[in-house]
Each structure stands twice: as C-alpha cells, then as structure tokens.
Amino acid sequence: MRFLPVTRPKVFTVRHAYYEAVLLVERVHRHFLEVVKADLDRAGIQDINNIQALILYNIGTDEMTVGELTARGYYLGSNVSYNVKKMAESDYLLQERSPHDRRSVRVKLSPKGLALHKVLSEGLEKQIDALTNAKITSEELTQASDILRKLERFWTGMINYGGG
Image (cartoon, rainbow, N blue to C red; front, side, top):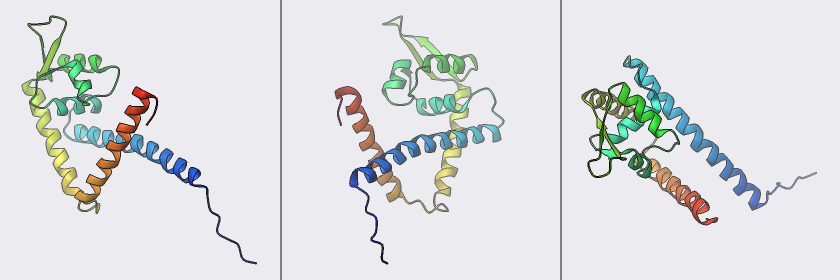
C-alpha cells in the first residue's frame, strides 16, 4: 500500500512559519541580552543591567532627550525614564534640562558611561569576529535584517492602520 504525501494547506504553512518567526525574534533578542550580561559580568560591572547597557551603547556620543531614545528605536519599553534615572544615579549618564523647554531633559554619556561604551564596543567586535566560526555571512545577516525590517513595517501598519 502506498501512501501519498500529506500536503498541508498553504495557510497552515504560513501560520506556522509566521508564529515561529515571532517566537524566534523574541528568543534571539533575549539571547543577545544574555550575551551583553555575560560581557558586563566578565568586566566586573554590577551597577548597570543589560537593558541599560544597550541604551547607553545606543546613545554613544550623541546627546538626546528621553523621548528621542524611544523615537529612534534605541529603547522600546515603558520604563525608559526609570532606566535613564538609574543610569544617572550610577554616574553613567549626565542629565541636563533643555534651556528652551524646562520639561525636557537631555542625556549624554558621562566619562564612566563612555568607558562602558568602549567595553561594549569591544564585546560587539568579538561577536562580529566570531560570526565566521558560526558560518554566518554578511549576506545572510543582510537578508535577515531585510526580513526583520519588512516585519517591522508590517507590524507598524497593523498598529497604525489596522492592516499590513
């Protein structure tokens, strides 16, 4: 008796692939945060967490408002003000009220923050160098980024317009 291959409806295949992609985005982000935490631990840095370290890294040599952190996509969360406050208390950030709008606070890295930025940059460079051993090419990363940007646009459309 011969069995015919089971063909799944296209909707099932797309549903499965979409859900798997959504789960992978979250899982990959979580793993990256763990890599950042490991870099902080190896450097003996205990007064900042991995989320705060990424915010700090993304600020770099810029000066910006807390709102700009979110608008530029450097931080996606509801407690950015809390994290900025904690980083300022730990002397990683300098805060200054805008002379034009006293409600607005501008932040930039302190000397301690710039030193941590250097540590994080070195960790990122080690990761980039290790990509060769993981057999991940520049082309594959570009393709993955392109797909993630498409998903970002799709989800933004779902939020803003109720459709893709």
